[in-house]
Amino acid sequence: MTAAAPQGLLAKLDTQPRVRDFLMRAVTSDRASHAYLFVGAPGSGKLDAAWALAQALLCERDGEHGCGACDGCIRVARHTHPDVHYFAPESATGYLIAQVRDLLDDVALAPIRARHKVYIVDRAEQLRANTANALLKTLEEPPANVTFVLLGTSTDVMLPTIVSRCQCVPFRMLSARESAAAVVRATGLDEPRCRMAVAVAGSPARAVEFLKSAERQEARRAMLRLIDSLPRADEADILLAVRDLMGTIKAPLADVKSTQQAILDQNADYLSRGALKQLEERNKRELSARERSGIMEALASARTLLRDVLMVVQGAPDETVNADASDIVERLSRTCTVSGAVAALDAVAHAERRIARNITPQLTIEVMLFDIRKALTCL
Image 1 (spheres, rainbow, N blue to C red):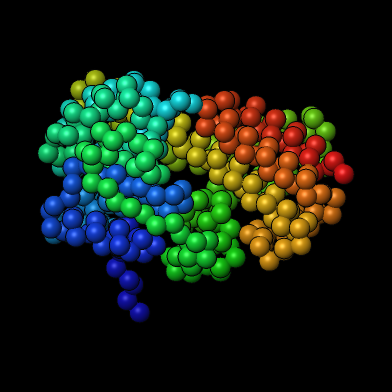
Image 2 (spheres, rainbow, N blue to C red):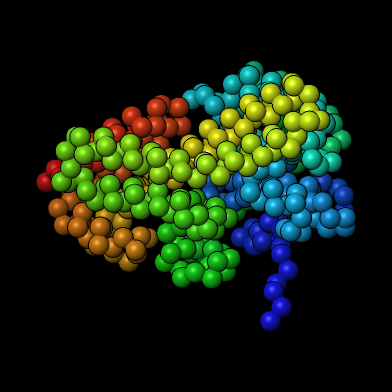
């Protein structure tokens, strides 16, 4: 049997067929906009589509637009291409003016490997007046080899001046069933496991990547085991377990660091000292973003487990998503009340907000687990 030819990320964007077809037509006709604004609810696949568009634009094979097999496509798929730049707010109140200045300084530089550069600006609604004003002129008249992809929840919560300079692309909200079905098609794995992956990772494409990573799945299991142990744990047990958990969460970063160093070594001979310094700073930001993403994934694992406990306590076991952890759910639900499960979920939500505000992750998780233990054991 002949192996199927590799497909690019854009061709695989089957959860948003209208978006996929629209972007494919724009790329193949060489009429891609210089600035897009992807709008939709969390989990609708905006970030996945942004990476897919970047891959299509940076594909190295003539006449193809995201072959999925060339070096450029592989680097984009692995989020290691030096000409695709991802930005997320670094402050509790939104983007820092220094972040936008770094972006604008980089826009003025030539691409490192490709003929094009792509800037992905996540949570663009957090571009406030001072940061947005610095970006407006570049959005209006960017260099010919640059594409901006801004991601937001709604145009209603964004500055009109930003919206007016972008081509808006709406994303429809996906149901949990649709998302799980997309992961089943992509991986061939069973539906319960794919449903769990979507609940933890947040979107079908990220769920597929989650299921490919033994380290990320181990971080989830470590979090579930930790919560399972809480009713019997003392303070010292929890503090030690959190330290180990943080090590597990950071384990996937080793490969990212190795790839970053390899890119630096390859480019050291022909990049200026200033350009190399910018690349090093960008690598640090990427590592920080990856670590935060891993922490949020671990918190999502805790949230889905506690939601399952709440469903069982309320008599709706068919609504659970952690089929492989049903024994843990059963143990916790035996001694938990509805109000206790709700309080435990509130503790996770509070931790997620603290991480978003750049509060120390280890301390945040420790406080969350102490609060969950109190909620689960309070009859």
